[in-house]
Amino acid sequence: MNLRRQGGVGEVGRVLILNTLAPVFLLIAIGTGLQASGFLSAGFLKEANRVTYWLGLPALLFTQLVGSLHGAGGATGMLGGMLLATGGVIAVGYLVAGMMGVGEGVAGTFVQGAFRGNLAFVGLPIIYAMPDVTVVGGISLRAAAVLTVAPMMVVYNVAGVMVLLLSQHRLGWAMLRPFLRQLATTPPLIASLAGIAFALLGWQLPVAVNRAFISLGEMALPLGLLGVGGSLVTVKFGGAWRAPLAAALLKTAVAPALGWVAGRWLGLGAVELKTMMIFLATPSAVISYTMAVQMKGDEMLASGAIVLSTLTSVVTLAVIVGVF
Image: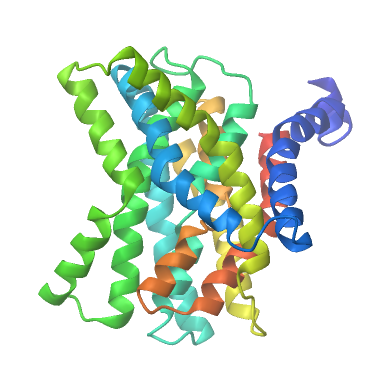
């Protein structure tokens, strides 16, 4: 503790930052280098990302939920703080969009970039790089993290579809069909619901199938990080930078700040507060670009927010990991 106080972050804090964040951002950098150098074909990381999204991540969420849902009470505080902070940053996002003159047709893209974090492919690897301590409820930090991420991905999908639809349609029954179609084709959401159902019913997968799912889940995080890196090369940034930068700062600075306020108000412990802030400080999810393309949002704004928030998140995450 003295080292940290005497030298700002201190030697202990610097080592913690290096050991926690370096593996994550090194994998992102490797993915960027592989794509930029042409070592991999243009579509390889894109296809690998599809495998991760449709198989690896769902398998990870399913197996973790089946094995740890009994301790879900240990994650309710973090989940509550995430929900409060996410609602707050959505409100602030619309306010900032109006102040900046962001058009009504693209406001949903701006707001989505400001709140939809890359919990699975950036947040979870950072948590998995930290010591797996026991938190409230007697469950491990990693289990509590997954129990927080799974429902938040449901929230992100619902809220993401809603804000994008509201940019194109008036609130009403016309939104129902595209809304339900989008939710029904989201593999992590389906896997989360299936994992919760299995756990509540007390079912177990056959040993061979369970081991196969665990192996698929173990590939999800590193392969997902390589895909994030590769996507930074392929997305189009464009010339306009004010709106993407504003969305990036809302995502990586304002969201964790709101999370700190919510977490303190809820009385979260130090580990839970830190974990929640890490999740809130993650960069805009790459899937937000895909969603913007599919739902006629602003592609340049979505991709710019991803690129800039990836850069700004390095600073914010370093502060959170090293100081809190």
